[in-house]
Image 1 (cartoon, rainbow, N blue to C red):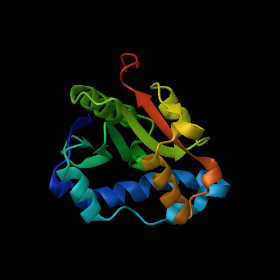
Image 2: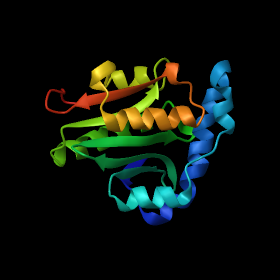
Image 3: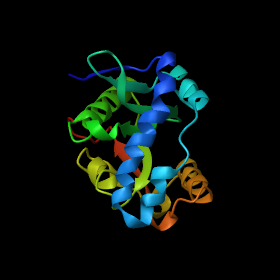
Image 4: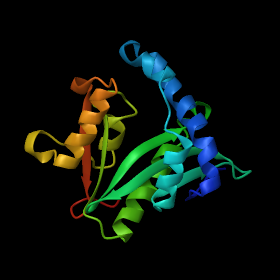
Length: 176
């Protein structure tokens, strides 16, 4: 059984390992296989995000992290920085549960939306978020903050033609 709970500072040590494991799924996509060997978010960055109060852990029956969602409050929106589930736990609804918890928290905070950047066509990226009502932003819909995030990703080797910014508008979103 998996439970979703707020992340604690001591959880930060386990998160790079989960991120590394989740990244192995990219080996199935030839053009993106290199991501499986990429750098992970540093423990210090995880601790800073956890301290911000918008990070959740999917914990196993021993309360050990098997997945996580790291987000931050950026302006009037919650921005999801990372959503990862250990490779051997994927396909069990853990990512969905983490996302639902984050969206519920954003609603509780009265935020206008939830944003993120992701790959347009990778099945567990944009197509996954679309199921929850997220939409791909185009042109002028991409604000300065999201344009900056996409720019930083491109500088770090992400193929900008395959990346996108997405948003869930909470004022119009359904019950997800």
